[in-house]
Image 1 (cartoon, rainbow, N blue to C red):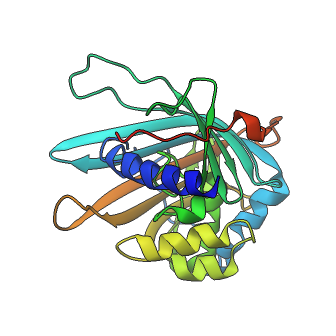
Image 2 (cartoon, one colour; image 1 turned 135 degrees about the vertical axis):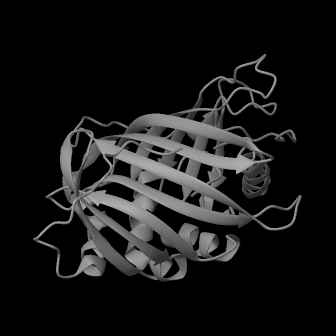
Amino acid sequence: MAEQHGRAGGTVVAAGLAACACLLASGCAGSGAAADDARPADPVGTLHRAAEALADAGTSKARTSMEMATGGTRVTIRGEGVYDFARQRGRLKVLLPQDPSGQSEHRPITELLAPGALYMKNRGAGVPADKWVRVDTATLSDGNLVTGGATDPWAAAEVLRGTRSATYVGRTQVAGTEVHHYRGTADLTKAAGTASPGGRASLAAAAKGFATAEVPFDVYLDDQGRIRKIRHRFSFVNGTQEGTVAVASTTLLYDFGAPVDVTLPPREDIYAGRIAEE
């Protein structure tokens, strides 16, 4: 099984960063944030605590988008689902873009997110429709911050544990909610060192696998310190051409307290065969 996981991980990286090269949005937040007289005294410390604020909130609904520009074409992948921050489990339905010809549509991929693991159904690549593919996220060069076409919402929050510098931009709105806008840079190596046990290995892999461990971000927190929107900008080396590729990943969280029931598939429903190259 371990061999299959490694195979799936390598294939998903290729498909993710090719599907990334064929995967990948900005989010939806208000613009024109005005200066606020009540500026937080410690922006960095506030952001270090953002993940814990989500754990205290329990659950939420989520929308994700990921975009990448390559070859003069901007490709966007979108996802929608729910997340349980207390258990660090989520479910997303991820919509891949049309083929460049526009003649075929991909079936939505169902993704289950759990500490250290990514499960995908309707994966394609020769996987039976009723089977799941399981990937150990610590084996992915990006720790599944990019590969799955959506950044795990808990991982997105834990990146902020590595915040090294941040400024308070001001108050604005996200989807009608008053929020505080921060802009800064996080270090993935530092984030991995202070992450929850289930996220450490994946963030450590990302720190080594990306072109740089530094991640610029914009994040919007509500008055309870919960993330309402976060946008990361990741950079990875494109193996087929010189230079790095920039990926913008946006996560929008809303409807806190929504019911969430994520059950991971049993072993017999996990595909143990060969994953076809794509």
